[in-house]
Image 1 (cartoon, rainbow, N blue to C red):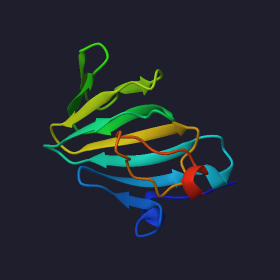
Image 2: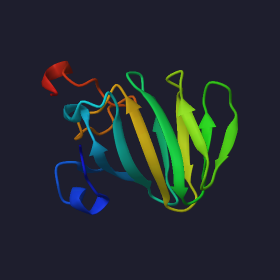
Image 3: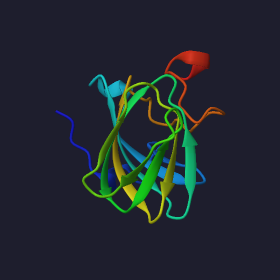
Image 4: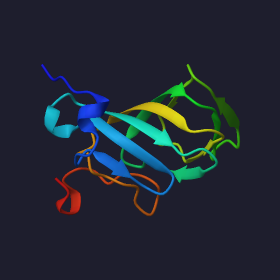
Length: 132
């Protein structure tokens, strides 16, 4: 059994920061669950361009407001608490936070836990280029 809290993750190697977001990685690859689970905050007033080429991601909005632009279709979708979006086709997208967005994110395959976005706006696969 694995027991962790947001507070126990703060200040560890599994708290990751970037210019427009911060993320607490509660479950990671080494936990052996087959997915990773993150609580991520997107800073209000920012937008982040992403493309998870190597991962599928499901995101559930816990708090805040924003919108996501699907760059493949041109559609824009409102994000409010209770909204789920799933990037089931490695969708290129822009996430725009009107206020701080607090999101629960699930990644498959799982992240190692210390990743930040690469030049494409996604994460490299664990084990590639010495990332384990």
